[in-house]
Image (spheres, rainbow, N blue to C red):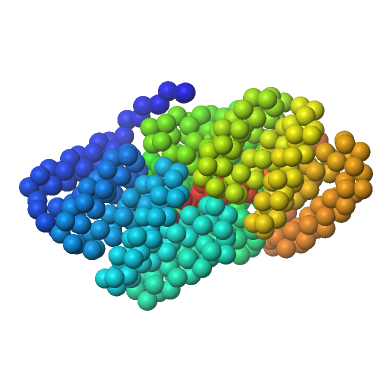
Length: 439
């Protein structure tokens, strides 16, 4: 395990002082005031110490239950759900959100109801249940509109944009992201601006507009430090690593990824660690260190199988399968790739499905299954043509899987497929989860 880096941040010291002030107030408080303070401390610890945040949320729930204080109970359950989500336990997060939703519904707290629908949508989204996620988001946005809460509408709209990104519908995603950025800018909401810049940078990365992507990432990184959002700072380092990797600058990419991994250790955050390790594995793959890359992938796969995160399971299976081809373990590769294709077909994630077609053509050709290979090649060509036509944006050059960049002939074959598969599955999924979950 890489050692945790030490950073000198005055803002962090101030935040810790604030926590101590709140904890001191708890000692002299009783009744609902005490329950509210416990919830406040839970929120304050959320991005620095998830386990402490969870502990105080549980104490807030216990205090509220003794008082039959429904608002305090519901808020404590929502706070617990957010902690569980970031720790990586979706089942516990879902249970807490649903219980919180019932409490907020009893007291007709529309803001609380909206937050729970949003966060249930986030879990559905992260596990590949996109239609269900959209239904939750629509309910959340409906509540926010009734409240006249523009920021709430923007948060939920950005979540919807993420789903369009997953589906490869980039024109819709970019338009929604720009609309959200305008709302946050008008409201002078630095956290929201940061999240929208993250998403837009991810889209620019996909389009190979790396200077534009770098500009947005750097702006977001400055904001994360201004508001002392360490969680998002970690994600930004990871995203910058991904972007530099796509930009064919692996040494710079590895520096950012290493920083993200080192910062993630103290937060016990499955999302940060998994996604950073995935990109490192892609770089090892490009260097033909296939076995080393697959060792990393297998650990990530095991965790996502336990979490029932089908989308990530499919992505990792594809990556393992591609490396197994390079290691001449073709039969094993066929098993992984067929299973991944089955999952991606069910989830309707076209770019990931496209990558499976590509790899299964290779495997079946090696195994002399030429009829199957020809059929898959036809599916690949048809799907690719549909996606290229659908996603073209005015004033931009559409990136092509087969010829990415002017120096494509100099890129190793493994690096080419890695660029296509990792981008859609990594950059956006880690882009705005931090502030979305806080809703």
